[in-house]
Image (cartoon, rainbow, N blue to C red):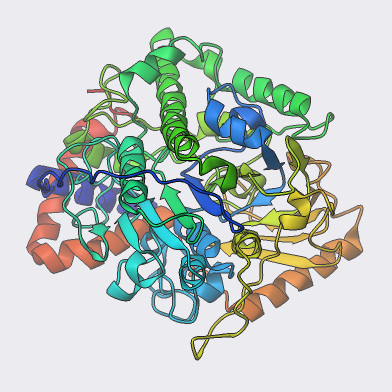
Length: 607
């Protein structure tokens, strides 16, 4: 069955590539001129910066070697959250960030592309925001804020779910999971007919080429400059959803060149270096231990040529992160020039942990659409993949990565900066969650929580906790030791209670069994406590079952795998409706040729 899924994946990728279905859009109109009017306000401006697939220690302020000076400056001016958790993939996290409601209650029980077809459309599994939630943007807009969004949206492309219907005055967004960072019309995987771009609720006219991080900041600055209303009477809420560092990892050459030779010692050495830096910064306890993940390769067993190739992957990854930070710096410079910076609250987070997939099953698609030659990586037409070994370094000292409920998949860097009365350079070790961001920002904006009814419609109430008291140093915790916090995605599960975490992860990251860890003292999840704390181990399993029941979590079908679901959904939702059974036969033929001649000889194409 697994072999069949791999073969079908190849069918889709190769046939899509040969048929060259990508369409380039016309260039956009010139950016509007602006006045850049500044001002102060009793209510702060708000900027939310969402990075894509950054590991726990990718940020300099969390122990990384990547140059991120502008976000690090925000961290020094505010609070770093070292025990902050999101979902292990993009759209569930973004849905909770925007609503303050658990993703199983807000409609995004799973990433649509990875959802088993038995689940799609059932309560909590729409793959997009449901009608029974109200967004942070709507609440701020209704209270007088001007609201803008640029970049990745990924919580629904239906007309009622686009940003203009979800509280945003201006928007230029990518509706789905991602695209090429140089050519906006280029799909990064063949799971849809085209990349979905929308501006103010209508299909967007995109440039033929761009660099995604630059473009998203350009458009945000244009929205701000074009809006001449005084900030003193109408503050703004700006949401930037970056693609960095989602695959394909790509970055301008000037940034890549800075990291040449930086990673010659390999991923294990980098993982240890970051652990030591995070300890020195106070991000993790001094005695933090690490496991070595079974998916991590043997650096010393690689040939010199392969080591150089793998170094280039991480050089580009680092460059992509620094390039994003550079663009954030442009936004900060603008706000300082207009006088808005000192009255702006900033939130930075990653949507999940580092990407650990090797994309082996996607090689036929990459072969026809991209080059993986070392000289092309990072540039236009090049497809970089960090892979599981570099992902282990990005999440150091944690275990696991994106898609899994291990800490490396769901514990991500988060910073809140610029809060009036907040402490500078503060580190908060309290258990916090992505649902906490909405109530935090609403409190700072002076907007009451909506409860269970809004505009005459019943809604799911916000369940997150405001973090304002933490940022101001008034408390050390926002949850009690006995308060359970549940989590599930694609069958990988966790329940937090105080400092304890109960979790179950599927292979290859986990063993499919429950484990118990003290993640405050042992964030690397190295010491299982189930035999030492049998009563807590049993009671927390009951707490998790209660979470599943109240949230409507559905069991995963037998034989489910995320990559298999992506394949099946791509075939059923796009390929067969567009090209019929004859197209499927063509896919079989062409993909068979690929696997016979090339696919079985190389795990990574370097043409």
